[in-house]
Image 1: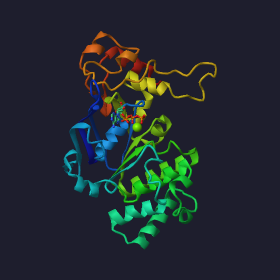
Image 2: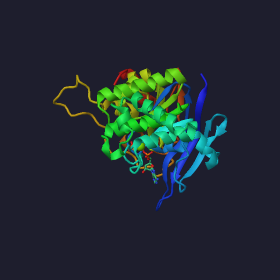
Image 3: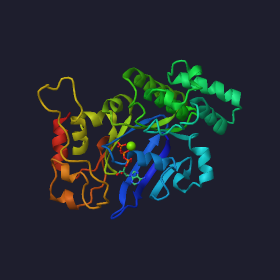
Image 4: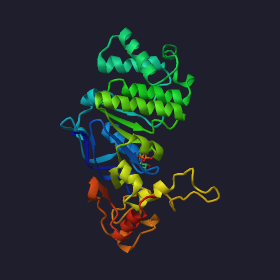
Length: 331
Ligand SMILES: Nc1ncnc2c1ncn2[C@@H]1O[C@H](COP(=O)(O)OP(=O)(O)OP(=O)(O)O)[C@@H](O)[C@H]1O
Ligand SMILES: [Mg+2]
């Protein structure tokens, strides 16, 4: 398989009073044509910032290092005028917040038509036909009638589907989908995930699926990348990761998911403490203050992502913790 997108040692920080916020730190990942990579981690772990970096949408105030390779180019060096041919066309994104991502002053039909006019150079009439088809594809009922609706006239789930239709309109090679199904009921959620899967089979579109829903990850992703405080904690194929996580943070995330066979009178296990603030602390493991396996070196020693058998990698350097996780087999 060929990598369509490669992120190498990406670091993104934002200036702030005091220490800069280090939102993403030395992140590397590669994405193959047709695959779905799940990007998971608690709130503030750097998932959206990673996606925005790959779309050239980080604020000017941010400081960015590393490389994002796409089509033989480093996207981090792409001039703005060339971004127009890539963004929304070859690489697109379903944004996390459906209300702020649509223009409230334009009908959804006009907003979709613009995508086809700009990127596919379709005349208005054909852009309209293509837009109606795109709305139908994402399961919006009576798509023709919805063309004249303004965003506020649609439900949250409908707006989400309009955004997905816009992102898929140009059949991108890479799609960043940031919580694409959070606002949707399970039926529509399944429909959208099926649509993404179909498009992946038809056009080998690669998807980075950002979600807090580990059930969606288990059912839709080929591989998973676990982020904590902007750093990679673990990466693995989905099945082995769920069967036997090789990082205490992954294990904690998986144990926090409610299961039908859990005893009702017992509280749901959670990861103690609060998600780390991306405060730029460089030494040691960022998960150390919350880790049940932490020892003194975790606070001070460099904790690189180390390759493990089976093509996976973990940033936990405590062999006894890993042995315990392995012995437990499943969460
Ligand atoms: N424009 C910005 N200016 C300053 N800090 C920012 C900016 N955007 C993001 N951050 C910080 O970067 C870190 C990562 O944010 P990001 O939005 O990527 O988190 P996330 O993993 O997507 O979280 P969530 O699951 O809540 O969407 C956070 O600490 C956030 O406060
Ligand atoms: Mg986010």
